[in-house]
Image (cartoon, rainbow over all chains, first blue to last red):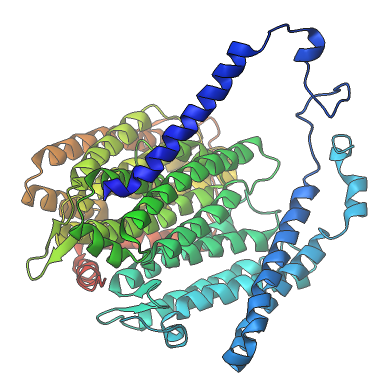
Length: 131
Length: 492
C-alpha cells in the first residue's frame, strides 16, 4: 500500500529539487549589484506609495459573499434543469424549497441595507482606506 | 442497508424543526420593526422544544442508516440530539436574561445558536466523512460569530478572531487526515473505511491519519494541547454563549469522537460489551496520555485564575480530560460513563455559568472579587453556585460524584490504574479553586453589600438546574439506564 504513495514522494522530491536548483543557479550565475531603486517594491512600474496594509471597506467582502451564494444557486440549477424532465415534480419541490430559503436570505440582506452601496459609503468611516 | 432520500425524511424531523425555526427567525427579523424584541427568543424556545420532543418521542429501535448512508438514526444519535438541544434550551433562557445581549439585535443571535444546534445534530449522527466535516464546520462557523457577538468590545472581537484562526487550522489538519483515510480505503463511509483498514497493513499512513483527525476532534472538545483557544474565547464571548460552548459543542465533539474511532479503528466483540482494536494504531494509549495531560493542565492552570469565566473555562478543559478516560477503555461501560457524565455535566456547568450571568448583570464584572459576599447579597444564587461547584468537584451527595464514580470504576475495572490515580489527584487540585469561589462568597466582606435582586423567573430556572444536580446525586438509575441503552443501540 505504501508503494502507491511513491508517486507522491517523487512529486515532493522533484518539487524540492526544482526550487533549490532555480534559486541556487540564479545565485551562482546572476551578478549582484543592488541599488536603492532595484530594492524598492515593484508596483506596476510606478513609484510605490503608501503601505500595502490599507484597510479595505468590509462591504467588498459582503458583496463577494452575496455573489457566491447566488452563484452557487445558479450552478446548482443548471444541472437540475438538464435532468428536470426525468426527475419530475419532486425535483421541482426540492428546488422550490432551496430557492425559498435563499429568498429569505435575500430579504434579510435587503432589510439590513447590504444591497445599497452608495448609502453605506456615506456613513462608514472606512471611506478613507478604500480610496 | 441504506434508506433513500425520501424514505429518510421521517427520521429527520428534529432537524426539520430546527431548520424551520431558523428560517422563521430570519422572516421575523425582516418583518419586525424593533430588532431588540424578545419575540425571537420565545420562538427559538418553541423550536428547540419541538426538536427535543421530536427527537425523544420516536424510539430509534435497532437504528438505521439514512440519506444513502450519510447519517445514522440510532439511539446514540438520539441521546446526543436530546442532550445538545436541552443545553441549547437552557442557554436560550440564559440569553434572554443576560444584560450583555440586551440592546443588541436578538434574532441573529438565536439564528447562530440554532445553526450550531443543527450542526451538533448532524455531527452526532454523521457516518460519512464528508457529512462529518460539513457538520463540524456548521458547528464551528456560527460559534465564531457567537463568540464575537459583542461587536465593538475588543475582548469579544479578539475571542472571535482567535477562534477562527484556531478552528481553521484544526479543521485543515483534520481534513488532511480524512484525505489520507480516503486515499487508503477509497471510501468516505466511516464503516467502510473501518473494514478496509482492518484488512490492510499500512501502519504509518494510518497512524498519521488517526493523529490528524484527533487534532480536529481534540480542538472541538478542547483537549490539551489543542485547548489554547478556549480560555480566551470563553472569557471574551458573551457569557451565555460561553456556557453553550462549554457544553453543547463539547458533547457533540465527544459524540463524533466515539462514533468515529470506535467504527474506524475498532470493532465490537459481540456479547462481551468490549471492543478490540482492528488496526495496529494504539490510539487508546494516545488518548489516555491526552486525557491525563488535559485534566492536569486544566486543573493546574485553573488554580491561578482570578476571572470566574476563565476559571470555568479551564475547569471545563479538565472535565473533558475526565471524560476522555471513558473513551480509551474500549468497553461499552466506558462510553456509558461518558454519556452519563455529560448529562450530569450539562446541569452543573450550565448552572454555574447561569449564576455568573446573574451576578455580572448586577456587578458588570466576572472577577472572583465580584463574587465576595454573595452569600449575603444574593443568598439563593450563592447557595446554588456552591452546589454546582461542589458537584463539579465531585463531592457526594451531588451528581458530579456519581458521574465520577462511573468513570473511575470503569477505569479501575479495566486495570488502567495510573490514569485513575492521576484523575484522583486532579480532583483534589480542583477542590482548591472551586472552594476559593465559595470562600469568597461566604467568608469575605464585600465592598458593596447591597442586595443583588434575582428575578422570580431566573430563580425558577436556577431551581430547575439545581434540582437535577441534587436528584442525580441520590437517584441516578433512570439516567444511567438511558445512557446504557444509547450505547447498546450504537448501530454502525
